[in-house]
Length: 373
Image (tube, rainbow, N blue to C red):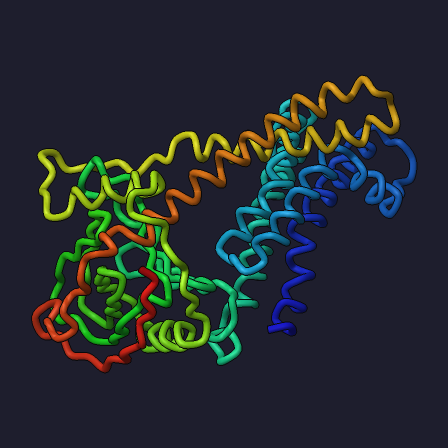
């Protein structure tokens, strides 16, 4: 895995540092060429562009996010957009004033950054060799017809699902920790069949290979083309990386969303939902935190160079960033608990021997289950 990360590092650095800085250099070059302002020092301009606030602070934030989410490969392309989106906005503004070349280069910046980060994620997560199966790095597998299975360090996560059928469902994703997996089965589906998950999202299981996973009161039937390879990844990583995670007492307020979802079990909604789940102020808190944290850090740096007046910025932006980050983490904890427990912990697991759909044939791997209640 070390060699994979070593190969991916230049791609990530190019995505979060090289692309936004390169755009600033190119923009300056185009501007100087229009003015016919003598020779152009690329090395000096690159150094000066990197030190600009519009590049330095978003780049520092992106690097910090990569350090925190070093294992979450699906997040890398989105993180790479943090320093490149300002370049795109800058290019569009200058494009209106100075010509289309600025606009094209600005719009190309986030596309190139996204592509480089996506390629870096592929280098780390694929192919699925033994070191990847046992590592903490996230591996994503697409489902036929929509949806995605993310095999993470300690759990499985299903996201990009169809909107929950019930409009009162509080989550659009479901998860299953490795220590609660009881069975992993690989089989074949011979005819299309609907499959409803515990958050009331409904998949259409199309004919072909499928992966059946049971545990934590849940049963997943996932249409995955490379079901054998993904099933081996899930079963092997579950054996190696399963760690008990005690849940809070059932009378804790953190179960609020989960209990609301349990009450929907078996209910048919009067009106089918067609909209994705909106997590509201949690995403707003993340955006506010991402915007105010660099401002607070900038104010701190200015205190030592431009006077104590910048303490006002430190207090205002710092307190706002802290409150927004606190809201983000607190609500994140509640949503994570709901995703991992869309079924009551007191509920029994589905019957392993029951046929999920007609014509189902399997080769199963039964895993030892760890109780945390």
